[in-house]
Amino acid sequence: MKSSIFKLGPYLLWSQADENQAADILPDQIKTFKEISSPSAFFKKLSSGYLWVMDSAMAVACDRLSMRRLTAIARETQAGMVYSDFLLDSGQSVSPYPLNDYQEGSLRDNFNFGHFYLLSAAVIHDALKKYGAPPKDASVALYDLRLKISIHHALVHVPEFLYTASIRKLKPVKSPAGKTEAHFAYVARENFIRQQKMEKITTA
Image 1 (cartoon, rainbow, N blue to C red):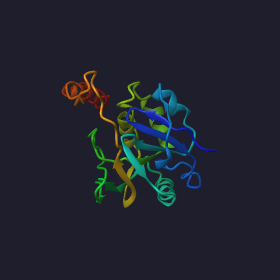
Image 2: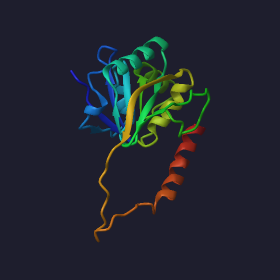
Image 3: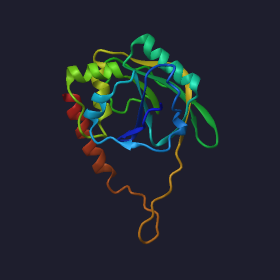
Image 4: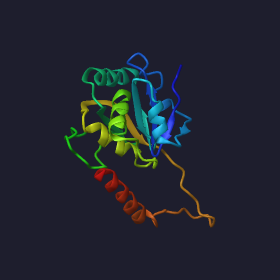
């Protein structure tokens, strides 16, 4: 039976038990999802072996063989997270996009793990048992979880191009007057507030 798809902030999440089940859901087949109202309750109920995380702003294509490979590496290394290089489709060309190895102790909230990666359910439970539940704010819950996981578990970079990502085509937002709005008015303020949240998480 296929897993349900959930949305946490800007990410889509779904769980799988092992390599054999890893490709029951392909990322480019996802059409519907459920919003997560409580990150703490969601992670506490997580029972399957692995949790897939995908950037909802991107269209991701990953075949069954690549998904099984990522799952196998997670099992073999006992890593907290496994992420890989990817191909970036601009609509005009497809280019390789290699990522950096994670550096132990890195606190950057914008470290680039790509748009599709895997977390260990067992490691998530261990991290939250030791360091407490994630914040209620969905926009920062995964950052908090990543820091807690990285204290005792490796974040493994696979230097292989295992999926293709492209920007989703979204319709422009129209104002009541019929003009397209840029929506930049609150960007600086929103970034400042978000940075304050990240600083609190890092300090904790």
